[in-house]
Length: 276
Image 1 (cartoon, rainbow, N blue to C red):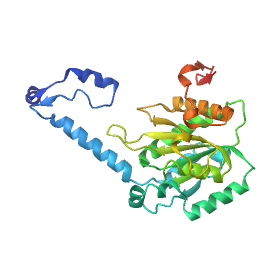
Image 2: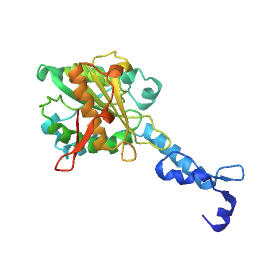
Image 3: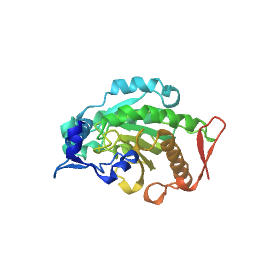
Image 4: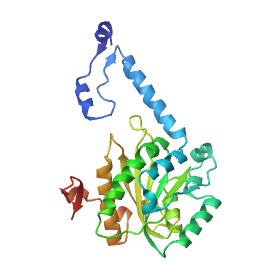
């Protein structure tokens, strides 16, 4: 900004608080309007949010990235399926179709469930949702943290095959979990982009998944990304909810996230874990 432009812009006293948040506060003004730099920044953020909704998930690249975590040992090769929404336009216009598996996807997961042990403890489902960039950027580092934490659990959790769903909504995870005969399903999904968060990952947990459950049966951990809730913290919150869901045999509004009330300690390796 030139010296002349600085003279035209009236600074806002709240501007110093922007170091603590991505929210658009303390923008200042030029006359009765926004400064040009702030207007351009807003337009860029709006474009990034739109791109996040419409840009397709690169499934092949995601699968290759998952291999770097050696997830094949814990979860098996990913099973890639599709919702009943045939394309992105249909997905955005018909949310109901994004909540159900296509006929081919249904048959594939039904066969996968029949080939597994009678019951899996946990199924992890990756869904593109409303932000492919959230999934592309954040799923692998989150799973890296979560699977490492899961290995340190006293209990040996039996995992269903990892599933990737294209053009899916949150509720499709319940159908996937039911077909895989999992007692608990965890859905990793791209959340609706905000103007300061185009790559926010959401995590949803359901105990006893089956088709047709309402949102009241799910727990949610939101805004998982480097600029939001960190991967390690998100992993610890998810582990807490999984333990409690398994203990109480429920999830959703009846299962409260009390991770703020438990003790966060550090082991000798420097990683954190939760104790009741």
